[in-house]
Image (cartoon, rainbow, N blue to C red; front, side, top):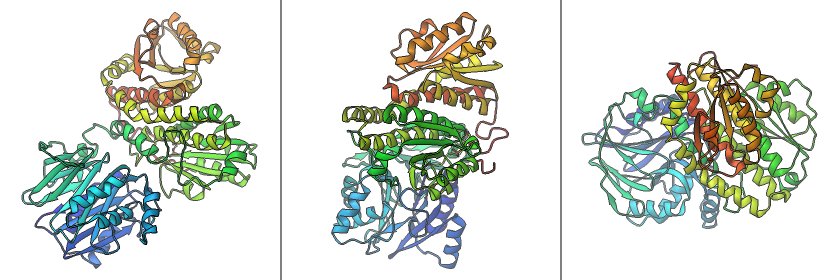
Amino acid sequence: MCGIMGYVGPQQAAPILLDGLRRLEYRGYDSAGVAVTNGDIDVRKAEGKIDRLADLLNSSPLVGTIGIGHTRWATHGEPSDVNAHPHTDPSGEFVVVHNGIIENFQSLREELEDLGHGFMSETDTEILAHLVAREYDGDLRAAVRAAVAKAEGAYALVVMTKREPGKIVAVRRISPLIVGLGDGETFLASDIPAVLHRTRDFLIVEDGELVVVTEDGAQIEKIEGGVIDREVMHVDWDAEQAEKGGFEHFMLKEIHEQPAVVTETLAGRLDEYGNAWLEDVKFDDEFARDFDELWITACGTAYHAGLVGKEIFRRLLRIPTNVEYAHEMRYNDPLISAKSLTVAISQSGETADTLAAARLAKERGSRLLALTNVVGSTLSREADDILYTRAGPEISVASTKAYLAMLIAQYLLALRIGRVRGVVDEDLAGRVAHGLSQLPAQVEELLHQESEISAAAEAIVDADDVYFIGRGLDYAVAMEGSLKLKEISYLHSEAMPAGELKHGTLALITEGTPVIVVLTQQALYDKTISAVQEVKARGGKVIAVAYEDDDQIHKFAHRVLRVPRADDLLGPVAAVVPLQLLAYHVARLRGHDIDQPRNLAKSVTVE
Ligand code: F6R
């Protein structure tokens, strides 16, 4: 996720911007840059680590006391010097940095090109610099308003012009933005840690607001106009807490980022009729119509996302779909048809086993689609098509938001292919699109059930073994719930299809054994309840994840974690969130290092 910095005050801006950007490094980035005004606007930017930018500033310093800075996490265009922010308009009088995605970037770019505009970079950001300059008529604030009225999406935008020195104008549409209030100087940033060592007084810019920053402070307004009287927030957090946004752990922060992640993953890619546009999925309609089998390969949590994908593709596309652990597939001589599509799923895009399986699929003639979170990762470079999940950097070793984004991306892919093949009609596509659009609000709602989840965590914290069951998509979710629990709480757990229990594992269910059942698949509800009955009859302690309007489940379960009613096909998205939180709370009660569990690494780049 990109980092933003801004400074207006009496000191030299460049060192302050650079320092702020370093403090935002934990957000992840691939390039960095700063711009300072001093009569003119000067920009320095470089791909790679901030040290490269620092070297550039040493050899070619910037003088001026007003400036903006940025660390970029690539979305549109590869990491490069040219694509790094800030970006200027053709006259060089306006400069912008931005975080997030401009959904209608392509049509805006084409409109501007028709008017004779040329662009240096592949970014959506550069368009904003052109738009603001075009709209400028002596008032930067008005120009920014007019530009953002045209730019759809979830983003934060920061603008500066030499025509109005002493001022920075910024807008927040979902992507975070804060103002730090100093003594005769004011800071702007995407996150509090950037400036926490300089001030403890902050104004939080909320979604849909515009802020004008000067050395005397900041004025916050609604984007449409109307001044807002925002209370100053005094922050007592230390720097480490601030990086975690006030959450105790990155994992919890990342779980709470999920509503925004779902919004980002969908942004600009889906209309209300279920038509999906996936910018880097390049295969044509002929391929989408003609390929005859689908392979999904991945490891760990990404594999579990693939299990959900298999069911989505099976149900929506009716295409034979295989999902294989990459470390198995690479050695099991898979019978991959040359007319197939292989989807390799990997948050990092660097997992050695996944890369090996993906290469094997390619060698056998399959078309390779990388479903990954990291722009420019090895997997994305080797693939024919790329579907970026846009979850932003995930710091906690236990994957949460990246998993959710992988699910959303697979619904999009299924819609894209299904519409072309004619197997997903308008009605179904519209229904899925509607369900997807509800998800950010639904996931948000789930995050406020901490007390029920803490109570469920208390109920299993001292268990020796925990079992997870479900059928169909619920089984796929159960697998992920079980992995989350074991990797951070170190509790032994196992997931299985609910119908499998009676074929052996039931022998282990005794008085008090926790069994977590996922129950979003209505067509299989009664069948799953039969397994729950078997558990209950042996004294097992049942914790159910069930829809909020399920009025039967309390008869069978000791505890119920409620999820908002959704279409069965979308059930896994809501159901996984309580399981992530459950794992988190159990691990916390057990006093473990949640973000860095023992023996595990974030990216497994060895076999
Ligand atoms: C578990 C987890 C791992 C990864 C796996 C694959 O929370 O994060 O199981 O999912 O190592 O990693 P990627 O997705 O980077 O290929």
